[in-house]
Length: 261
Ligand code: G3P
Ligand code: MG
Image 1 (cartoon, rainbow, N blue to C red):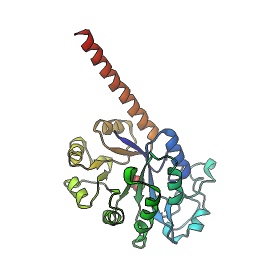
Image 2: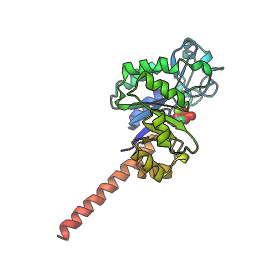
Image 3: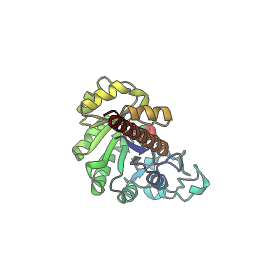
Image 4: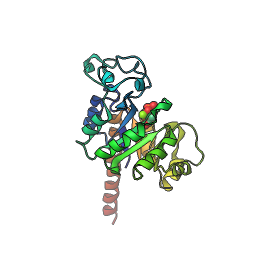
């Protein structure tokens, strides 16, 4: 079964990486949420994508140069729509508390590294995540692959996955070297036969960010383990219709075999 992850929450309907976006994702029926995290200047893991505050908040400057108290003063919703002006940058802890109401919800927490001085991110975030979550439906991804080894040392049972774009030679071997249990390739960097090979080697495949209907269908047909999408409602709808048509086919086969007995 493919797990549908709402990329940065329901990011087409709400400002990305906010509690509203995560709440909406759950309302839409997404089975997982993707969360980008960085450290504030004073070492609090916060949920925001960019290195700077400009695009998604009312603030200026660099996230990791701003204290948690100052980050909390910013409006993280108006850029998207005036109706979200109360929205604040959530801390990782706030999102973990929110998610604890939904024990089956998958969390894909992406460690964002923009500066060398983010060294404490994994050391700070992983023990916090461990306090709230089991390794059953929690995973850590990052474009900084060396950091995944650090995560593995901190919590060896936790699933990790390298994010990448472009072609990797034998990606399953690369994942194993990193002690990762999955790969998270850009959706143009993977295809059916390769997905089959990687999965046959015990490594899960979850492409990002799959927003077009034809690609969502394609990846569902290729039976990926999960996919990241800004449109979880569309993906769930496609998946649902696919299940119904498969069910109908099975019924017709059964009816036909009874008739022709
Ligand atoms: O998890 C996939 C995706 O989040 C990676 O890219 O830039 O949206 O964080 P980005
Ligand atoms: Mg991300």
